[in-house]
Length: 73
Picture 1 (cartoon, helix red, strand yellow):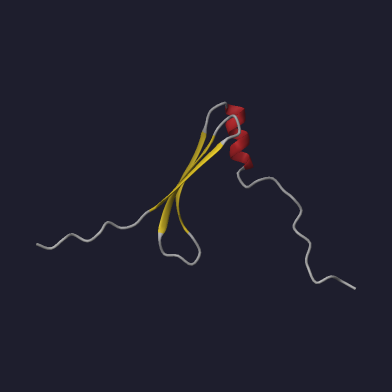
Picture 2 (cartoon, rainbow, N blue to C red; picture 1 turned 180 degrees about the vertical axis):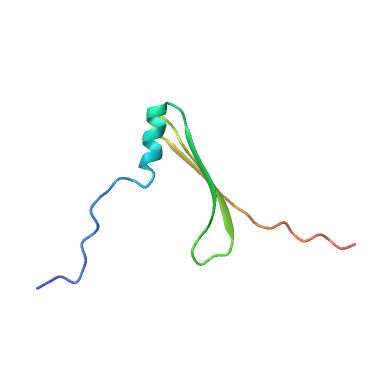
């Protein structure tokens, strides 16, 4: 008799393993930048990820809202 629940996927390397290894091997930070729109949203976000040679990772996310409309005199 089979169970009702599926097994979790086997563990794997992190998604950014290549950038982490490159930063450690080169001895300098590796920077990834871009714009993303999340599922179910229409608002774009700018992201920046900095992988440090010592293994630290800094992530920044900023919402890209359009500027407010000009005030009419």
